[in-house]
Image (tube, rainbow, N blue to C red; front, side):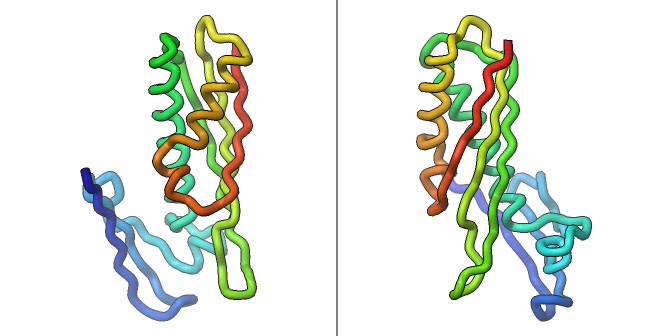
Length: 141
């Protein structure tokens, strides 16, 4: 399976503008630029998209692993905070912190923690990223 996404850019770094699109059409010419990445202007940015991909991937992996243990979640909510830092050789994504809250009937804390840890390291986006990936997982009753 292969999925595609594309970006179009015009102009220099600070004044230039771009758009991001995905094969599925979920994103279609969504604007991005220096102002959306560093100045909180409306639009998206690569770090936000990586965070969304990681949160979605983790949630699906967690659900799959729960199912393998005969648990069905009522809900899984995951937030990814992506850290972009300036380094001596330019900018780098240095960390992603996942915060997940889930409602899962019949699971105990130990099994919840075990499965969440497996999902953190096992989801394909976690495997892709060369960053410190951390997780806070909360089981709601």
